[in-house]
Picture 1 (cartoon, rainbow, N blue to C red):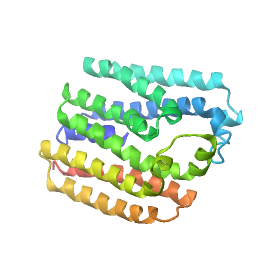
Picture 2: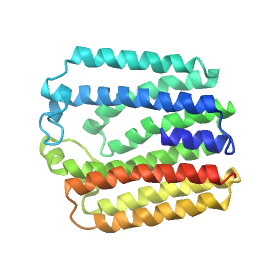
Picture 3: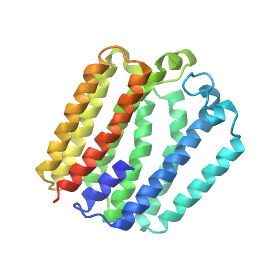
Picture 4: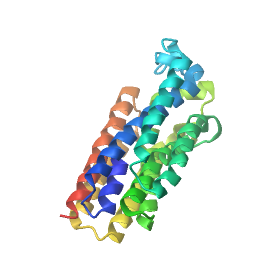
Amino acid sequence: MLPTLWALVLASQGHPDPILLVVFAAGSFLMRSAGVILNDAADHRLDRQVERTRARPLASGRLSMGTALAVVLVLLAIAGSLLLLLDRLVLLLSPIAILLAAIYPFAKRILPLPQAVLGMAFGWGVVMAWAAARGSLEPQAWLLFGSVIAWAIAYDTIYALQDRTDDRRIGIRSSTILFGQWTWLAIATSFGMMILCLGVAGWLSGIGLVFYGLLAASCGFVSQQIKTLRGPVLPSLAFSMFRQHVWIGWAILVGLWAGFL
């Protein structure tokens, strides 16, 4: 949800349409929920082999596949109805969102960096939100899209540290396996690319210095995470650090809003 709100705020110079805020907040919830079900459906056999995920409803058998897919269809139908409130360009972009959500669960079987596909799936909402607010796609929309991809690589790599041992054992591809001992550096680089994309997007939009101050604060916060990641990280700590990125998302949103005051 947060990146779509970034796009709405930046595209509107700090004055987003309230209806669009509601539509994209609801749409993010619906598509995220549908994506999670699709991911768990695709991975239910693999999830049984991973300590952290074996109790998931589909993996444990507490939920049938038919019920899960029926819920997906309901969620997609409701999300589709929200598109009727938006213009034609957003409608044309929407099938790509469904395609990316469907592709991601299989990316980890093929690609060494599936987190990039996750970022595309989450980031496509940014492109749609910008199109809804402006009726066109300026460079800032693609810079925001790139920032979300880089951010997802950073925070989902931290998340993946929880399962590195199990992923190696069952042959799942992951950024933590790809980068190995240099995982901390990959996360730092990804976050740096995120900040660069956001900074350029803000500059092209003529945003104020408050935004850059909060970007700098976010860098300081993540630098502490990077310092921790250079040593051994327990799964519980990795999950806690992953969840902290929600606050980074909120800080950027506040910075975008305040930057136009």
